[in-house]
Length: 269
Image 1 (cartoon, rainbow, N blue to C red):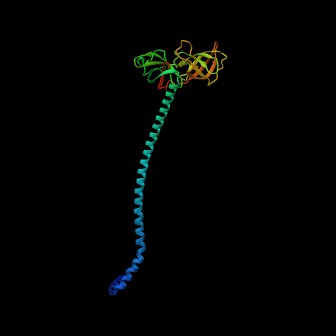
Image 2: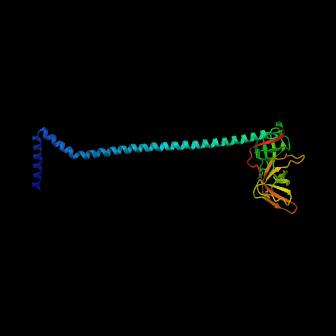
Image 3: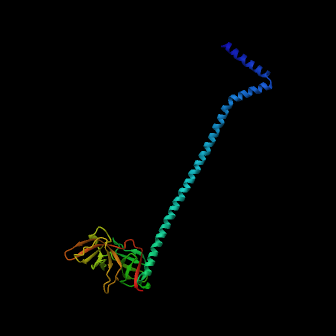
């Protein structure tokens, strides 16, 4: 053990003496050789360091991309909302345009009105509109839309009126069937008689009428009646023969539970 130690010490001392006796050229050659040996390891370490830096930069870019994605998602949601609003506005404009065109070509003097409330019953048998006697509205005047008949005025105040809907069982309308001589009286179907609210029944038809689904029903315009002739009322859903007459179940042309804008017939043009 002591001998090995002595050998190591001797080699170290000899190496030191040898290095001290070398010239500058030899020293530079030894340094170059040493650098040649360790250079690949140094380069590898630098490459690793650059990759780590690039990964950090990449992570930063991912954060930016996520922020951009979130921003675009919000913008997309806002654009969808704006598009829906524009579609709603366009639909409302189309509806108003159709109503104005109907008003222009109608043979009647039509007063536009808006539904401001509905009664508290289950099937909304009356509505209130924002027109009254100050606007020229009187009792028993027909109320309609460009699609068809809605009802008639029953109570008229200064700036409001109550409209009895045709879906109420007490509202009676004389009707005729398109393409036939059949006529009858329409009224609202009683709630107890139907699982579907808002339907009409047309009674006093002949038992041979044999009406088919889809046939259109119009107001008949009887003498001294409230409703003029030719206003669409609805379409036939079914027909049944009873003991003394025939009865048709009719779907109204106007969904009275959804109507918002109407016209009151206040005279002839």
